[in-house]
Image (cartoon, rainbow, N blue to C red):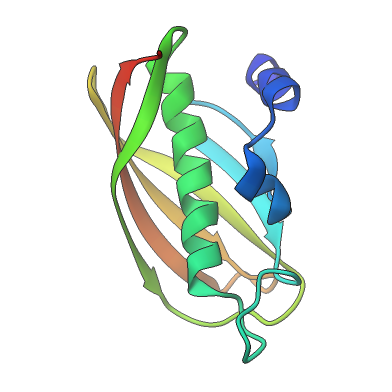
Amino acid sequence: MTDHLERLQEFGLGELAEKMGIDITEVSATLTAGRMPVSGNRQPYGLLHGGASVVFAESLGSIAASVHAGPGRMPVGIEINATHHRSATAGFVTGSARAISLGKTLASYEIVILDDEGGRVCTARLTCLLRDAP
């Protein structure tokens, strides 16, 4: 895990994830976890924006898929869906991407996002195509 976290610190998460305040706490091909502040990621009614949940979910799943793909390969998200169960208005949300299927060319993850009280905010599923890096 440390090697992957060090690599993330060296290369970063990407502009969008960094703007959203996403922090990665655990990294492996089978489980990647992190947290994101609600503040700064709300829609006009004060609720966590559903799009922010999707960006958080795709970030976690893509990092896990990148570890699974290995050196010289990269994941490309080809499908994501999300169900928003409840709102969050403050604090942080935490997320965990757990592998559903890890193949040679495809990797799929279920991502669960929880609020500070442990209530499920969002469930997403991400499928990534694994290809050679340019």
